Image (cartoon, rainbow, N blue to C red; front, side, top):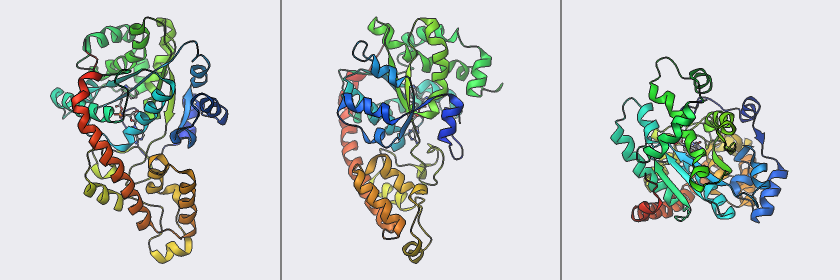
Length: 366
Ligand code: TYM
């Protein structure tokens, strides 16, 4: 796994061991619940399962309030997987009354994709910003920027960071090769920079919490190595697992394979076609399903409900049991999910349209 590619089945427990992160424990969740009065389903279901220093962020909250940082690499339309960390961010923003810095890395996607012009990447930044706003962030407390548009402030911070990172560290952490363009090799300094913006812009050493899927962790490992040397706190993280591809239970969804994910701009017909063709944990025939039951643990449809589309824990458990016993058929389950997603997208697309009018309120510019 690199921040740009995830192949095969991901062993999430192994990542905790390999990367030295902490598991999200019951005790930590209790502390969050005490503060916020409730636990978001992405937390109570352990979709966000690993962290660094989240306990510290909670401990010092009364004295030093944290600020959220997350982002998006605009390589095409946003899919529902991308929304997962943003939905948690919104919940955290509302519950802890915090500011959010949101980076849109049009530079990264231009450098990464040979076929992209800078204009194409920058244009996707605009379209993806609408999705970010549609999640419902507070315009007074949320600051969005495209790297290309916020280049002056960003560059000034990035050079200070880049001076602390050697090529051998960058190669070891990100897997860069001799053929990698030098823009990509500098890029980590750009994604690290917003970790330190809150301290600079607020004029106080500020704790930062980064909600993201675990693929982005390589950046934070490098950041944490250099933060204190540069006079900042190490940023804290909360790491999510991936909403799986509709075509198989492993890995991340692919921007290049449109059938692998539901996009926020999909029509009802798109959703129906994609969900009806998705891989399930069901048996090949109705008769076998009735006799042997299905396996929700390898079912993408079940995962979609688990992540977002069945809020009620009792109903989710009921589905799980009915699937296992053979009482529930895959077709029925798929239809239920289609309905849930269509409802969700109808509302999301309405907000996305409205976002065009308020985009300017969210943008940070030099
Ligand atoms: P990007 O655009 O690949 O992904 C955006 C966010 O979505 C997460 N993610 C997923 N979460 C759940 N299920 C999935 N299938 C899934 N696929 C992606 C990613 O972890 C990410 O949180 N380089 C970054 C942009 C970035 C950024 C950041 C991300 C800049 N600064 C700070 C997080 C935090 C990127 O290309 O993300």
